[in-house]
Length: 68
Image 1 (cartoon, rainbow, N blue to C red):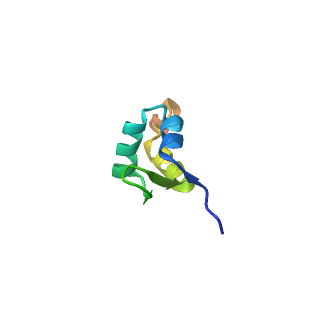
Image 2 (image 1 turned 90 degrees about the vertical axis):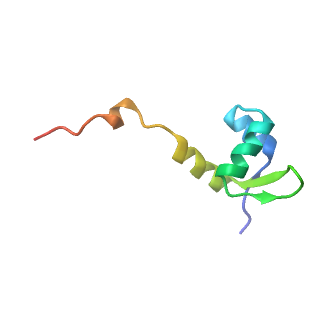
Image 3 (image 1 turned 60 degrees about the vertical axis):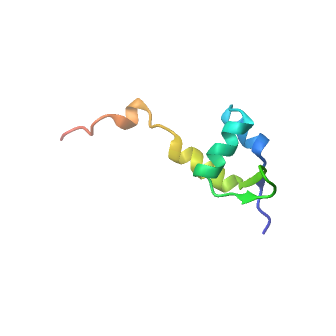
């Protein structure tokens, strides 16, 4: 089974940050493969999981449950 990988630049573009910031995020928060001194590859599934972890809940999700 082939897995889809993202480059530093693709991660930076997806997060709308610089490549330098993307490299820091990758090193600190996302499982990755190192393919060069400052070049990483991130599995798209790991990137999607990172986005899910970082996504804030909507106001509706944060409301207290209604009492019966």
